Length: 101
Image 1 (cartoon, one colour):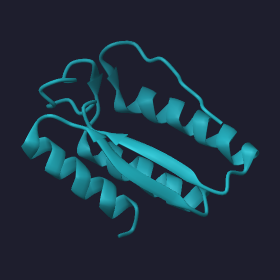
Image 2 (cartoon, one colour):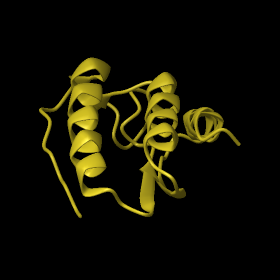
Image 3 (cartoon, one colour):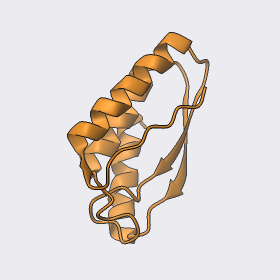
């Protein structure tokens, strides 16, 4: 199952979380054995590359990881992107904590 959704430039955490929840609900109906996450952190509000396109924060990356591990039996996450090294390290830490590792 591949699901994409478009959000307007500058979308905030609330809108992103609403859409992510919709997708995860669809995924639960599909009942996947494995969820693969391409973890891109360039949507963080302070990222050099993606900054301004999305307005996410480190708590959002914890939230999505935590939601995934509570909804699905197996979650594998790989680093995709993030270009502000300081922000990237904070996002990765938050995401890993959300995975419960």
